Image (cartoon, rainbow, N blue to C red):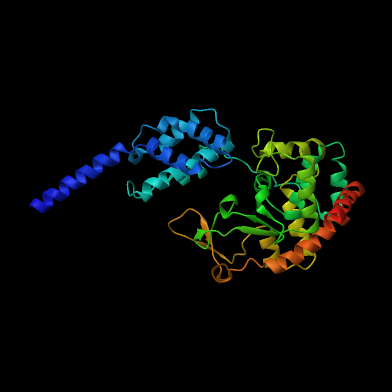
Length: 342
């Protein structure tokens, strides 16, 4: 009898504690995990839209309540999608704490009552053979942006990663750019925090680095820094290209240029995908406990090499192709600087 009474009291205490844990409590925990992100201002804005839910016990959060709160505000479809993703992540924390068994917030993304964000046709891009026409458009563009587009074209990095490159990532003894795993878009691989991403430094990449250092000797740790020392934001690098070449390309499109050139020039799929930091997956498996498909392949489980030697050869060949298709002024810039480096 005493054991049953103790069990009942413990259960009542657990229920009382659960009721005291509000959505706002878990939202603050979620924000704490995001505090070091470059997009923290946007993340905080998303959190503001969810403020009406803060005082509601997390156990009482249901889809109709979330829907009502979001639709009362003037939120764009894109931001609505971000808000729902944030709610899912916040509620996941409550599941991890066993405060709730599960939630169905992901279903809101497919709700007919929620305006859907319609994605465009993708980033515009140009094949390497058209780089002369593309870079000719930048004749009156400030050099720092031209250097950025050239470096992104040569490395195949995502715009966000390229914007936040730090100078100490460049190791010229080993001729590598070494980017910490937590600074990459894909942070988890093989069910654990990923290793640093290594990019072979070609002659043109080294030249560009030195050129940026000489032309913009900023005291910031970042290679592409604003006047206050913080890294450039997305609009800083997208607007100059949009102003003169919106009909041709977008900065992110350089990844398509690299990947397409490699496919057309006999670079193996595995090497080419690793060059642009894509994993090579097999067929997709559906996980009953998740709304997302999970990718799996035996290669992903057993092949642990980043194929650096093969990627170095591929990127050197790609470097030569890019330079060969640049306007004469940029060819001369790279060749004159290369001779000084040597």
